[in-house]
Image (cartoon, rainbow, N blue to C red; front, side, top):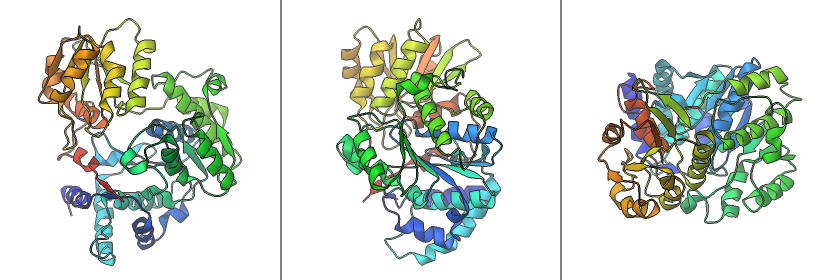
Length: 427
């Protein structure tokens, strides 16, 4: 099997869509030898900030001397981003081997019950982390929590970063329903940390923690001023990242009896954390500054708006915006378009993209003084905006991943791997 063969096999799995439920993942894990039973986890869910919080946890525990697995999604450019050990991507040879081992297991599943891409990758990651003898795995949920494939593990601690509207067609149409799905990762007696706020899911998480007899730690604005955050300069821009950092610190302190971490390791881990595509500042040879941020839902777009106002108060950015059709793009545009001096609307490289032309009247209404252009591709939008000194690219992590390839910030794989992010959940 070649690496291209392995990637194609994963693409073929993606044709089965995605499934909410744990039966297949438990069965796959059993066929793989129950690798999750040889590992320790911190399980992270939430609407926004999951990946950043995972990156902070990983960086801190690695600074403390642990061998740390990191499982996140989606990937920006390369599939291997999803499975890392001490921030080293899984090698191509291991992807090929794991796919080869996985293929015979398909015979154990009936027609109509075929494992999905995410179910397969979840178990591949567990097997790889166990082989690598990771001391700890930072384990990010894919969609929701309760029925997400990652929920077959019993972690040392659970983290729910926050609750906002996303994927309402699958998670529920109220914040309480969404919170209940995400609180489904809580396990009996396992401590939980959350940055959820009153009226925005906190009450549901609190009640679930009570039922599970789990100690709950709630982080809020006041924790940003507590040590070590009062003395650390985070490389990740934006006030919201300090809230994510507070959640990470709270989780580490909740586990201090099991995995001690020194104050020095805490500070070092926070000061050196790296998480691309989230308020990532890029300086081009031409002198142009580009800010890349997924900002893929209303809360994310609002966080980007606040960061632009606070971190770049004198700058008036040009904006390249692309979004999926199932997102609340009107709310996202309300946050971002009024700040822009001009706007280029581009498609996301996905069948789920919103037609950019349909956004034009709304953007013109929000900011009558900003010219709005429709570009057939992100590459053409970058060319159009090449002379703008400050450019923001936002609206989708898929768009940011494509931008990273075009800007040569990440090496492009031999074949397109961003398409593996495509999914269609089914209940």
